[in-house]
Length: 297
Image (cartoon, rainbow, N blue to C red; front, top):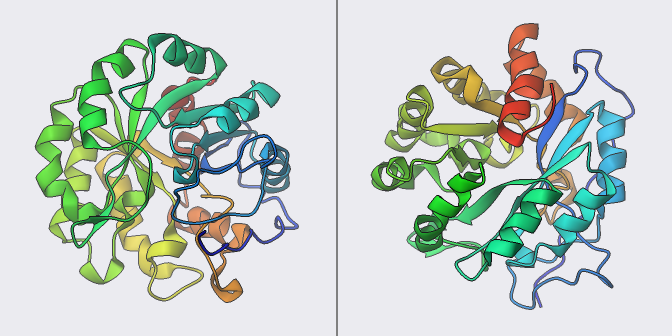
């Protein structure tokens, strides 16, 4: 049994006027109800229940019309909680599933019908060791790429940026859209000239990958309002603003100290400061997610 992590803070009590209509929060997880959708026995953390009804409340409170739910590693390849969420809000939500080579064609077709538009692959390592249990890896990605491409899906890659230089040739050869989670989970102390971060920038500039401006709270060395992350976000936007989306990472799993739990209002304000012009905000929050996740414009 893993140590239970904290739940999110209450939704902020304001809706920023700068959030445009049809804005999309492109990275969140839902958990439970556990009587219906129990966690995997083998898992890296134990989150509290936060079912899709709470995520919808979070979207409403923050002024976001749309959201993307990503199956978390604590569910392994069990996507039932994800599908249930998509069924409850089919016009507002899209999904990113976790699948492996055993996933049947019929299951892939069913996931597509319910609004899944991508599959997540866990390539995240530290010191050569996999950080999170469960999920699908690089071999699964290679094997599944043609099946994803046939359905118009993308591959969402959870990877540590320092590993990207070695992985980039393999990723480029897959010939399917790639989305690098959380800006590559950079350590800001390495700086924007870091070879791994520059590989991410090159993948963006070439149109070979997308990324999510998300997780500033997890990479900042200074804490809220995460000003030491601005330089990385600026480099990403300069490389290819048409391949960038934003995600809250709600409900912020794997926090165990209340003082470190991010406030979603602060995260939104951070984004608005990182992207000050209305046209870029419209692209990142509305137009780009519509293309990537198949929402109507």
